[in-house]
Image (cartoon, rainbow, N blue to C red; front, side, top):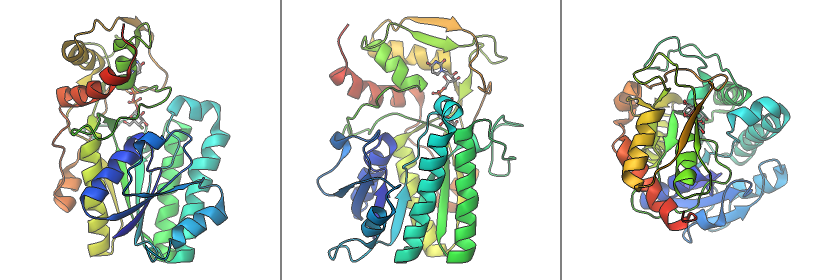
Length: 331
Ligand code: UFG
């Protein structure tokens, strides 16, 4: 298929591009490089450097070239994703995430592209009422970021009804790890997520890891999260696109490993694998952090035959360390 991957130079996007190329798809990447990196691009994929906020450029990209003869599908991973920032600068998230997605859907409608895979988030659920979270869990985002993802899911529902655009909305839990075959090496810039922060501490780019809270009612007092390897996520994107094309039906799926790891368990694995001390201190809780979040990915298994294969903590840490140890500043 001819697939336009928007946000394909980003951390998750580049892994998805690699997976689609491996599947034999014809891939074009569209990215504004605001957080994506040229280093993450593959020579087999055509690249458009532009923003989803420039409608004419987006429309031209969706039309494709005479080579591609248009696109069969769009994969959209071009949203901003910093939860804390979204609470301070909601305008930025309204514009890029919500207006940007409306532009993408309008360009798809204008050019007759019928399928979209969208990177949604477990943030659409808010504080869990029960775990593991399945797709029936109430939707009540705690952050403006989560709200934008939920709003996009709702808008996609309308475009499905009104314009026949079928979508797969994939609600990632904690995306982590790097390509198991070492083909992606771009480091995330100014990361705030736990594992890249740990890695930056391991290589001396940061003095210490601050652990947000050790008084939660969990096995060691720190928060539990469901870390899902980006290669596993990428496989799910390809399978989800197959599903919506074959069944002409939209879907929303939770994607996680179905297991939980605490902050201290992640840190212990990182210290063991890197052989670095990784100093840490405890601070107070971070506002909005639920004590535990794990996914039920039963529906993904039933519909796509998908389950996580590379998402054990050590595989996630080892694949990430392979990238950081080559790039980071030595202590
Ligand atoms: N944490 C620390 N110190 C840090 C960073 C994180 O202790 O410097 C802790 C957090 O308090 C949390 C855990 O590590 O307990 C994971 O935090 P992340 O910031 O890595 O991830 P979140 O669980 O907050 O959020 C992530 C994504 C969201 C997504 C969510 C869905 O960043 O986009 O998973 O589960 F919505």
